[in-house]
Structure formats: structure tokens, C-alpha cells
Image 1 (tube, rainbow, N blue to C red):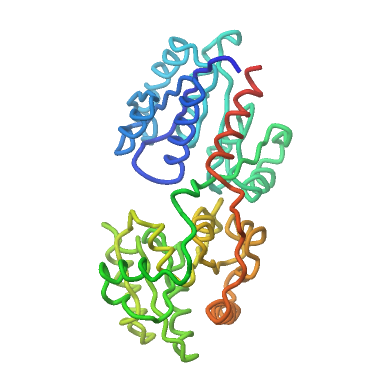
Image 2: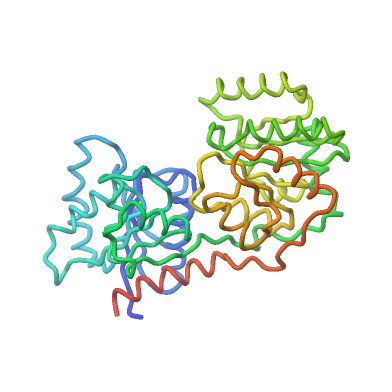
Length: 370
């Protein structure tokens, strides 16, 4: 494949799955000898992007304001001056701006147009821009099905399912008998010390992540004489104080306040998984993919979650014992008891790797530029 120039568009580079995927593809492009350019409003991940050999142009293309339209001319100029081969949009407003910019470039010089549907956005004309690419990357079969359901005029032949992947070296398999991760977590959070089973629900402090279900499960386990502990890294976050207070009051009413730790997000997630006995994924809203399922299984810890969206899709393929029908609290309790008593067999290898995702994405670019 000849040397390509690929421009990725997204709102900002602070944190999150979209941002991580952008960096991962930029690194793969540079490693393969291509030119990688990212356009965003900036953020803490700009420096790691630059360190990889990619380039960054700061434009606030994610702000919902009429003033943002002024960036269309800047994007068009960028595409022409760099001789861009591919423009890859990863979010709705940047995609609209990118698509408008491309309209003003005559076909012989016009870059190819790629979009990625990272989420299950509210259907409608605004979100429909994400189905407009010459190739549309879906991060799971769940996303592909959702897209075809809500945008039935879309040509299925242009869709490519490329699951997000994890770097298994960042989540190494840790023997269950290794107590060091639990001891280190207990040093940071003394309430998690001891030998009681540790449940882990990672996720930002938003109602959709299902923290209340996890607290309810903890209380139900206690009624079954299982004195477990629950750690929810990410539940404590700026601006989420009222929600956190709600959760603390719920834990108090259910009699498990002393068994729950609400903490800020940890940057040592591999250790968090390794310290736990059971990882929970109880989002009320279906996830587009469910990366935490892969991370936990890579470390060697079982996952219990609702069987919907990307989480249900991954559990069905990799660890079906952990899938429970959405809202079935009795089934959730029974599966938790069973999995704590007798952990299920886990996959020896996680097929959804970072390298596979990078390879497949570069293959999509190659399809369009042959």
C-alpha cells in the first residue's frame, strides 16, 4: 500500500473510548509509514499523540454553536493542502463539518470518507451522518444491527464490523491465588481489606452504569449469608455529588454501607480486576461494545452482566455463564452465588486484540485507496 495521509476528526482528546481508538489508529498508521493527522479541540492526550509521530491541528469542531461552521473552510484547506487520502470522522458534529468540507472539493482531489459508529446514538437525521461514509465501521454486531434498524436505506455492503480491541499486555493474566493485588488495593482503600469476596463495578458516576443494581446485589448476597464487598471506581467524580449521595443513602437503607467503597477512577485497572473475585457490568442502557468485559477476562476474572448490547454480545461469545436477562434481579443473585462458589472456565485467549483492530482498520483504508 502506498503512503497514505489519513485525517481523523473528533471533538477533543481528553479521555474515553473514542479518543483511545483515535490514538491507537494514529500509532498504527505511523508505524506502517503513513501520515496521521488528528483534528480536535485538544486535551491531555495530545502529547501522547504527538509522541507517537502523529500530527495534531487544534480546531474546536465539537462545540454545538453556529460559530463552529467557520471551521468548514479550515478543514477543506487542510484536506487539500495535505493531499489527504482518507478523512475519518468519529463523532457526529465533526462528521457534519467534515462532510460539508468535502463537498467543496472536486472529485479527483476529494479524499475518501470513512465514519465509525462508536455508540448507539439517538436515531435521527443528526446521528444519521455517521452512516454516510463510503465505509462505515461498526464497533460490534450490536452497532451494525442498530444502524440497519434505524437507517434501513444504508447499503449493508459498505459496513465493516471491527470490534474494539485491548492490548493484552496491559491486562496480563493474574492467578487467582495471587493476593498481592488485593493487598495493594486494601492499602489504598482499607475498607476492602480481608478475605471477603470482592465485587468490582468500574464506570463513571452516571445512573446509566447501574450502580444501584450492584448495591442491590450486594444486599441480596448478604441476606444469603455471603458477606461480600463492593468497589466502584469512577463513581466518585466532580459534578456527580448528588448522585453519589443517592447511592450512599441506598447502601445505608439496604444495610450495606460499610461494605461499599465509592472511589475516584483508578489508572491501575489491571490491578483492580486482579484484586476482584467478580466483575460486574450492569449498565441499564446497552453498551455499544463493552471493553471492560475483555479487560476483566484477559486478567482472568469472571464477569457478570446484563445480556444486552455489546456486553451481552461479548459474554455470549466468551463467557455465557455471566449473561443474565436485563432486570432479572433474582437471576443476577443466583448467578453471582454460583460464580463465587465455582468460578466458570474462562477463555484462554481474547480474540479481540488491539493489533487485530488496528490491522482491520488499515485494511479498510486500503480498500478505498487501491
